[in-house]
Length: 289
Image (cartoon, rainbow, N blue to C red; front, side, top):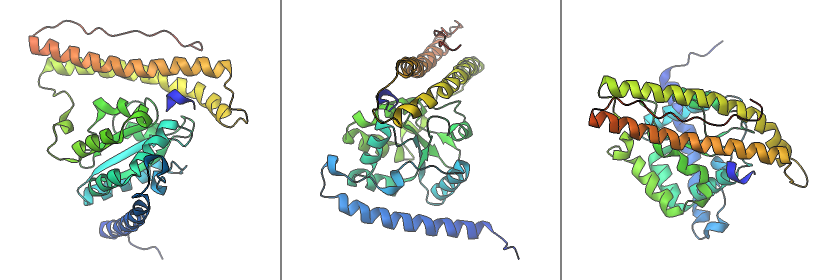
């Protein structure tokens, strides 16, 4: 929501796999029971399932590896969601995921993991594992191929930063589409067909890496202010918090939009045989820079 402020045993691969499958079966059984309770409720009355609550954990990496392993065994996609309980849109996504319509899709096609980012100080190790330099807000929703560890929905991830405003019908359409192994959406990255495209993609990656450093530093500034605001009794935002929040919000959206524009420009140049340089944007400095 960032917009709303708101003797040692010998462990074998088979033993690990069997244990993971037992845990997975128990979770599915509990989820199905909870889903039946939600069948006759309106959207506003839906109870959020416990697996869709963002809870602090010590080791995100271990959870992610387990999720990828189970997804691979079950021939499903991994669905990783970075968010927080203070985030309006994270909670909106959790509520929609708990509906009978979405539960059927998720149980059949995905292994889901909700990852708590705290007050924007956690989760960077998770996105780095999937070659993303930073997360641009909460919730960050990644559909991952567990065999290649590629993020399949990278170009449309921004949509879910406003998850609470997305109609349930769009949830169903989106996650149904990405559940298919033959979906064209699963090949939404530009194909590196020649040296010219590779050069452009290298430039875009360098640009994103540079801006990601700035954005991560900005999270270090806004995070404590966000925590202070969320834990205050009157929920009254200070001017410092409001101004800083607005600056960070603007940058994180502009970066994503500009990267998509650069991708489109690179593709056009390659398709037309042009060697024109990319129009790399510049952004105003933060007040603390």
